[in-house]
Image (cartoon, rainbow, N blue to C red; front, top):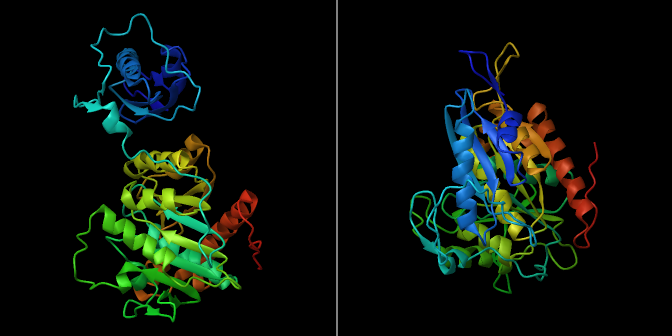
Length: 395
């Protein structure tokens, strides 16, 4: 809730919803401390002109509320089949419509045909990859949020529990997994079938483009090459075996919702995904896009992991350097569980630098990843999407 310090006038989401008539197309309201309001408006992607009218009118109405200093809005095209577009009010501004164009806020025009190109659609079912029982994608819509750290420590935790675990570093442009596992000087061999043999580290079978390229060479690759590299590391590698498959393959994806993510979502039989974020608003603003991509490609999202949640000083006091509670709020907004909040522990950073994941040791860091892995394991078992051994944790 925003509280106007000048006249002590409370401005809340309920106030704004009431002023707009509590419409069903208003999926969320965010209010900053300085009175800036952001409206989250669900739009029918087949009728963006109507949604644009609603957006303009809603912003104008919200600006009339005392204590509101600025209004922005975000259109999210997440309408389900059969749902109706936001109803138009008779007082909506008289805007010129373009039946063959969609108009973003900046004024540029994209044709409906152009907007429909490359829409993330997943054909079902996809054939399983030999030697792999389940695939968990660890994703983030924003870079620098600790996604690789989470991937490595989750893999280490599962391996510590005696599971057969694989870790694929699909972050083509920034492969950090070899360094974080302490095997950056190694490279995968090939077996008699001319398949790549994953590098083993801390009980984890790993593959990364970082094993195959010069660490100082820039990765200037276009989309088709990125797709080919990811699919080769998945399909042309000796992951597990038919008799003894991997219990779980974790894929550390690059940030964003680009070529690599769509390749995984559309062409790989992903069991589920986990989204990593920091509490700060800049990171949270992109989480919805990542969740929407998985929703459109029918990949279940198990929940959100909040990284860098706080720093604890020697006295035990917590300092929320990246903001407080952002991951919990986003999880609630998206209707997803908050799997874990991971503090800024020195041992986690040191583990990544030294190539020995903190999850392999004892202490608070290991316990946090143990709890997170347990929650993920229970969620994977609950999905029952493909036959696989139950993932059981032993204390």
